[in-house]
Image 1 (spheres, rainbow, N blue to C red):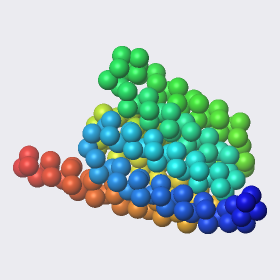
Image 2 (cartoon, rainbow, N blue to C red):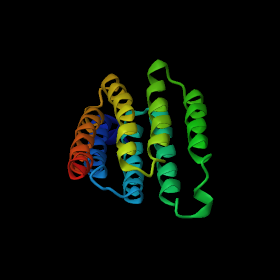
Image 3 (cartoon, rainbow, N blue to C red):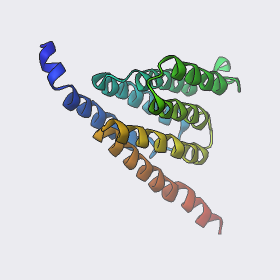
Length: 179
C-alpha cells in the first residue's frame, strides 16, 4: 500500500490540489468575512495534504498557519479575537517558521504569501481582503510553477480570476449605484 502512494504521490497531490482549488474558487464569491475565513480554513487543510504528497515542509507549515489563522479570524465576534496584535502574531509566526523550515530560496514565497494572507484576511472590508490577496496568489503561483504543481498553479490563476469577478460583481456595482 505504501508503495502505491509513493509511486503515485504526484498524481495524489494533484487530486488534493484540484479539490482545494474548487473550494478556493468559491471562497471569494462570498461577501461575508466569516464565511470567507471558514472556507479558507477548509482550503488550507486540503492544501496541507497536497504539499505533504509532494514532500514540501514549508508550504505544509504555512497552510497549518492558514488553518489556525482562518479559525481565529472567523471568531472576531469574540472579544479574545479582536486584538489588532493578532495579525502581527501570525506574520511573525510565518517568518519564524519559514526560517525553521528553510528549503532554499523558493521556500520564501510561501512565507511571504502567509504574511500577506495574515494581513488580507484580517480585513473586514472584503474589497481590501481581495486586493491584499492578489500578492498572496502571485507568490503561490510562482512557487507552484517552480514546484511543477499543476493544481497549485491553476488554483492561483483561477483564484486571481475569481477575485477579478468579485471586484466586478461587488465593487463595480457599488460604484455604478453611487453614480
